[in-house]
Length: 272
Length: 318
Image (cartoon, rainbow over all chains, first blue to last red; front, side):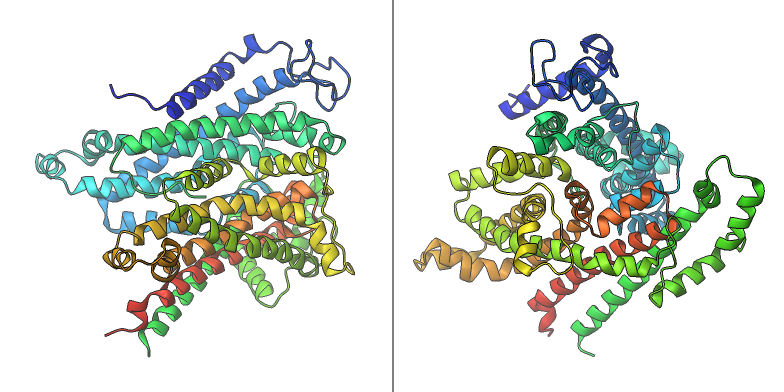
């Protein structure tokens, strides 16, 4: 076991802390999500550790519940983008020919426009709910996973052991799941952290624009939106969820950087 | 034909083809998805007759490809149709706002590009020492912040902690240039922060890459000062990757602008798009989405063309 650098340890600790509070939000949060308990924008006190929000709800409790939703949506959509993107990427690399051409050109097309613009266009038609948000985010992000996994699988597909498996008469699914997947796993795992962070930022941005998670559910981006007017009067309530987003993003980045530096054969960047 | 001209023409033609495909994607993506425009306008309680009438007047009964070509023909002649929500001419509304968006993005670009390249040079010069570590550390943390989070930190810092700016950015016709500049100061600072990090890191990486060449060692052994080595010998050879990353980050401003405009209530194209997504005003969303996509693709083409032109091997073929 090599020594884990301090930055990665800090990242691991805070990532773990965020996941833990998200998982056990119901037991950790001091007050319910929607209970109006105090006056508008009260400063932090013993009763309300981080103060109260725009209609007098406890910010700490809303942060904890909001983290649950934010992390849940980001996690599920990045799992979706990984499952779909890496499977199609491996398939394109193994099959080649027209399958590869069609998939790659479609991905080029979608990636030719910024994800946020595509998401806004699509969300102007679809009903906005958790399922739709997760599907839209997952599908859009799968294009980036596709590029990475196709590039990684291209290198693996020409290896002798893959040739041997094909000559042995193994099917395509065997080659994908038993030969390529295990060897492509480490760069993909490192990429997962970056995709997860991207998903957190993406859902937060959508919610901030009012097009993401809808009330009564709360998430961090939406909380910034709710409390932003207080900033003009010097009330820092909007900065709490903003800080939470920043802290989660930085701590996962620290972990991902560490995993990334341990895996040598990584291709592709984090993209915008 | 000169090979470089041929490459450039090819690249532009490819870009136009891509833009056409994107227009199909935007149109088909919004038309083919479940959800009925007429229903969306009238709400769930609409009578069947009202729905049928509206469908007729919007031309929803025609097959999709005919509507697409109709729409595309309109877009190419500058006619974007009318907004569903208030019947305003979309082309006019866009023309009013496009200038504001370009002003904001232009100011951000004018500050961030020289700053990023300058900081990149300094970081490369002091590679591994404290100026490099400070610059890299700061930019690494801004890279992981979404635009609106960065925006509120900046707002809080510069309007509350050190009150030197107004938290809203209002620009209206008839304002003097300086008044406009003052009004957009905060949003420009935020946009600069958002794009600076990536540009600066890539500049640093490109320079450090070149610094390992033999001719750099020769220049150092000649006794030139480190800054002169970088300026005269490393920079000209690193210019192609720097140009392409600069232009790609300007393209990234397209996304940043949307969010930052909403944060500051700045009346321009991004705000217009977000408002009409919420109102489900499809023609507006399609038109503005297409414009943002065109700018993005256009800048990408520009990046490729500049990279071709900046490559001496292509400029002087054997």
